[in-house]
Length: 186
Image (cartoon, rainbow, N blue to C red):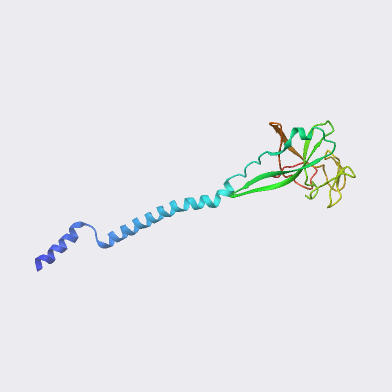
C-alpha cells in the first residue's frame, strides 16, 4: 500500500501543474472567451442603435405634378396635390402636399409651395381677389407668389422643377419661416 501512495505523489509532482493553477488558467480562458463573444454580439446592437444617426436622410425624389400640356394656357394658379416620400432612419412615410402651378412675369412655369413663409399656414388661392391670402395673419401674395402685403418677410417659396417625358416634376422642400431670405431646412 505504501508503494501505491508514493506513486500518486510522484505523478502529481511530475506533471508540473497544480489544480489551483489549472483552475486559474481555465478561469482566464473563460473570461477571455466571454469578452470575445460579448464583443461580437455587441457589434450588431451598436450598429442598430447608431444607424439613424449615421445614415443621412435620403434626398427627396421628384414628384409628378401633371402633363406639361395641362399648364400651357394658365391664366391663374392651379392647385395640385403631390405625393412625397420621406425616409428618416427606419421610418418611411408618404405624405401629400399641395402645390400651386403658376406662371411668372416672363411666362415661365413656376411651382409654389402652399406653405406661408410667415408661420407655415396653408395659403389658398382667392379667385375673387386674384391673390393668395393667408387665413392665419392676412399676408397676401400675387399670382406669381410675390409678396404684396402682410407680416410675411418674403414671397411664397418656389420649388425646383424639371420636365421628364412631357411631365412636370417637382422636388418638394421645406423652408425656414420668419426670415427674409429663402433658406432650405429639409
